[in-house]
Structures are given as structure tokens and as C-alpha cells.
Amino acid sequence: MGKKEKKSKKQGAQKTNAARMLDSANAEYELIEYEAPDGFLDGVSVAKQTGLPVEMVFKTLVTVGHSGQNYVCCVPVAEELDLKKAAKHFGEKKIEMIHARDITATTGYIKGGCSPIGMKKPFPTVVHKSADDLDEIVVSAGKVGLQVRLKTKDLLAVVGAETDDIC
Image (cartoon, rainbow, N blue to C red; front, side):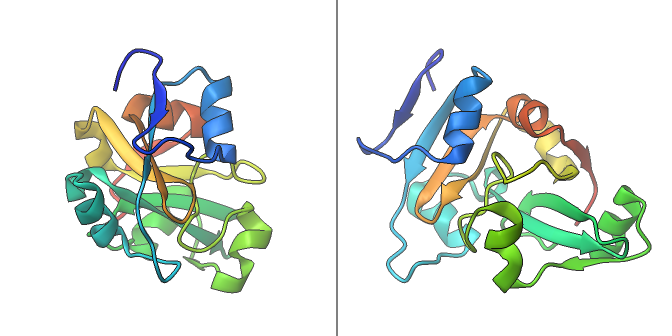
């Protein structure tokens, strides 16, 4: 990734809210396109298809707490979110995943293309602590078939996230 370089491996990658937000934050990033013929591809398959280390690719999960507040959790694609640990992090008695039908209305993104960057409104966000060991991280860029690679510190700053053990 070059200095202030904003590019796609394939020319013509469509800008998403996530990319526009990174542009306004003057963050360096790279858009990476991949094929998703059935409209959805699990995160491990995305990592394999793009040739990225699986531990570098994170999925974005949207939850709702007992209080009704939404929270965003980013975890490595090969891991599972521990809802009890996430609830404790956010100071909730209990949290659960939001219904798939509510993803677009809540975030502005669709299932399989939900980015922690550029949602309709900012939600409290936590990224799994394994990100602390990564200089760069890869998350959805806001649509199926498009990922964004950026510095971990930039992701945390742009979305106002903390890291914690949530798996």
C-alpha cells in the first residue's frame, strides 16, 4: 500500500460510504474486489480468494443490547463472537445478533457487505484484541465483493473503536 494511495486491484471499484469516509479522514487504504457469484461469500472464503492471511480479515457483526442500543463487533473471520464477553464489554446484561432483515435499516449496508466504517450512524464498536498485533486489517468496504485494507490504527480511529477479547 503506497503513501496516500487509494486504489483497487481492479480498476473501477465503486466508492462506498466506507471509502468516502476514509477519504475524508485522509486515511490510506486499498479496495480489494472479489467474486461473490451467489451474492454472499463467507469470510474465510473471501480471505482465500483474495490471497490475504485469514487472521488479517475481520467480519462485522451488528448486535443489539438488552437496552435496545446497537453495537458493532469486528472479529477475525475464522472466529466466533462470544456474546457474553461482548455484553460485558459494552456494559449490557445481554446482547444478541440483530435479525438479518434489520441490517439494512440499521446500518445502511446489506448482509455480507456490512462495513464498520460509514454506517448510517455511529455505533459503539469493538474490534477483537488480535487486531492489536496487526499493522493492517481488512474489513468489508460496504458491499458484497469489496473489501478494504487499511492500517489498524486508522480503522480504530475512524470508527472510534476499542479492542477487547470478544471471541
